[in-house]
Every structure is written in C-alpha cells, then in structure tokens.
Image (cartoon, rainbow, N blue to C red; front, top):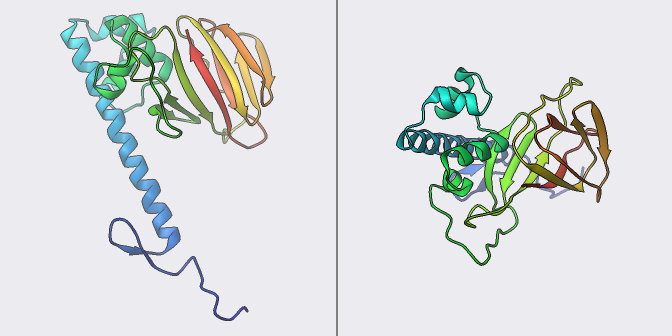
Length: 221
C-alpha cells in the first residue's frame, strides 16, 4: 500500500452548497439535482403549452386529433407527468402558430440576424427513454428549420424502439458513435461522419449501437 495516498472516494470535500460530502455522495447529489431541474423544465413547458392552447381556444380533443395521439397521452403532456417529445413540441407550436422557442423558454425569440448557442447550453427539449434533445436555436425568431443536438443512449433491451413521425423533412449528421435508423421497413446503420435526409412523415426511430451513446445533429425542416 502506498503511504500518504489519500482515498479519493472517502475524503470529504466542501462543495458549492457549503456541505462536506465524499465524492460518490456528491455525484449522486449532482445527478439528483440535475433530475430535479429537468423535471421543473418539463413542468414549465407543459404549463406554457396548456396556457397557449387555452388562450387560442383550442380544445384538448382537437390537439390530440391533430397530433394523432390518445387524449390521455396528450393530457399527460399538458400536466407535466410525461415529457413532450421534440417532434410533438414542433407540431404543437405549428398548430398554435407560435415559435418553438416560446414554448421552450417562455420568451418570444428576439434574434433576427444570428443566435449563438454555447457548448452544452442548448435548451433541453426532452429527456425520455434513451433520447436527449437540445435545441440549438431557441432564441432565433421565424426559423425555417429546427436544429437539435441529439444524444441517443444504448437501450437496455433488444426490442426495437417505438417509431414516431412528424410533418416536414429531417436531416441527421452523425457526430460520434454508431447509430441504427429505422425508417418504414428499412434499417440503416450510420458511422461517424455519415448523414441521412428523409421524409419525417414516415415513421422512424434511432438506436445507439455497440453499447455506447451516439450523438448527431438533427435539423427538422
């Protein structure tokens, strides 16, 4: 045993909140805090959707029909008990005739010339199952496309992921990892640097391969 070596896993350290914790305990604290912040974001987005729908005098039944969803599923989105998928959020914004950025942040996008999103600062849109979306242009008004940074975590089962569809077209560029894309009856494997452009109205889904996360740039037109 090396003399004088500190055991990092048991040495208490003072952290930003002023409390001493061992490193593993602090990691759990950090993850729990992040989950709490994400849940708050989900509730805030759900509240904005509900408020704007009511202001627009659109019924829950109409929204569920437009989105091709069971009424109970849409109600779970509005009450914040289930995270709203990015594709559904885009559909909601289109139906309510507002910018997606307004639903994400509660503020009408103000940038007309350009908007900069720093690394890791994209507004999180959904964090469900193995998908994590970050909006990369939430503050740009009158967008003609919606860019997202998408991270797909490996699934815990071999069951194919659920397919979903949304209006428009989509472009995906794989930044890291390996990704299998399911489109209609096709399965396409993308390697780092590969890209695909497809009709987003066709049911599609993504799955990370090799037991490792995959990250790609997605642009929805």
